Image (cartoon, rainbow, N blue to C red; front, side):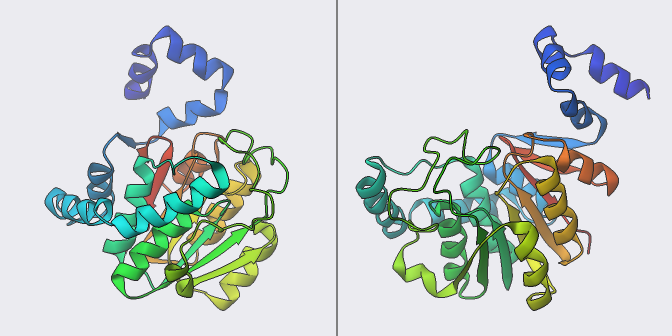
Length: 259
């Protein structure tokens, strides 16, 4: 208990005000969390036995893939008149898939398809595995999902995943609809998966449903991944309920299921 009290006493006034105005964030102080700014460091903290040297070699493989980056930029320039934005969690996603070597990855939330493309590139480089994606097409701005994004709707005439290069589509299955309706059906077809990635509606109800449903179908050593883990209290509550610590990378969360 004294350690919790010390955490609150050490907070700045700005941070305290943030907690007062966003009370669900208090749960983050009550469970172990490891914050990182390096994708390689975050991955090593997530996967026991992996060395930082191995992670950095894998990261370079990703960053040196000119065909991948040029393909995505070409499409993005045509549809959005800009290049693709990349974040640390994109690097983490690629490396996680390379080292876990999943047979089945399930993803909720596709939008343009950048994250899907990153995962598919890693599956392609592993020469194994499929990506199953669920998405409710954002033909209008979706509160709790796309409303904070740089572009809040899909380009005119485009379906979710339009950014994915053709050479990666053979390993991809895409289903349209709400995750609460589609996920239970998908887990009947794929009762055991290796990686689950949430990036759909960031409400407490949706996130907590997806985490708890996916967790029972994750294989031992599998990964539960989520973008925007601090938009609601769902991720921290889920980790606390399961007595598990998690890795945080600029708002992206990673949790490994015990073997």
